[in-house]
Length: 121
Image 1: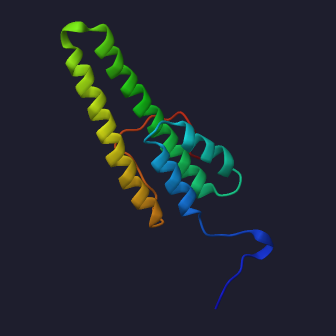
Image 2: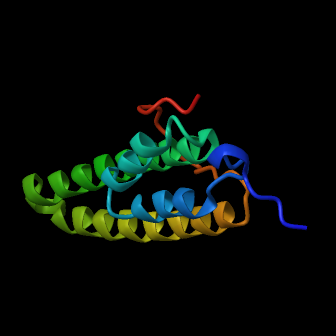
């Protein structure tokens, strides 16, 4: 039995868009933020997931900027800044990929570290 949505309204959450937001957080907060802006009125679940991904993307951006500042402005331990940059990149890829897989299964994803900049409702 095929249940077509009534009046163009679909009750199923859009897992593909939410998963795209989590993958986009690897590159920074812009892609998840755009997904959040596009979906915040239509699909609350996808908007909440995009807000979570945006917050994590901002955290990754701040951590990468701190590691870059250490690399550029503290010459005696500049290698620690480089290691920090690599660590931030690896952690971001792993955590965003895990969140992507979780969201594709229809579950909500969480990150171990989070800052609340975009409200998740």
